[in-house]
Length: 157
Image 1 (cartoon, one colour):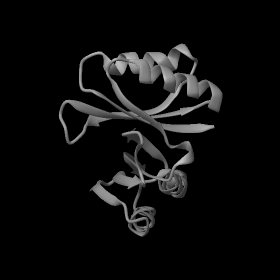
Image 2 (tube, helix red, strand yellow; image 1 turned 45 degrees about the vertical axis):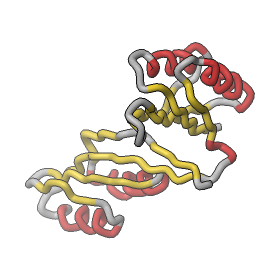
Image 3 (cartoon, one colour; image 1 turned 60 degrees about the vertical axis):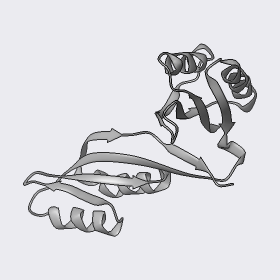
């Protein structure tokens, strides 16, 4: 099962390494990890996406809460939330495919960042389904140089 964990932590050196170490010690691969300051520069928000069974992940959350720098830990698995990811990527084009690719990008309401003779650079922002659909619609043209931020999430409470 996929879990999105939100942790508020003290913004100090070494916190990220300790948090990530708890997941690797339990054999969890982190699918996505984003970290950034909150409205308070002394606090960072970490969004961690992992796959694993509920029981083992519950133990990891308990251990995360025990870390001295942890303020709070939430699992969004049973909560309503909004999530987004930012992605930049290149799509191969030629004279025959350029207009088709541009049309797909415009219909998806994503942004063309640069157009060249051989490729288009795209900026896509959306939830997991939006990103997957866009990549699926463009894969036949050849997608290269994919850069992703990882998911961020916010509870709807």
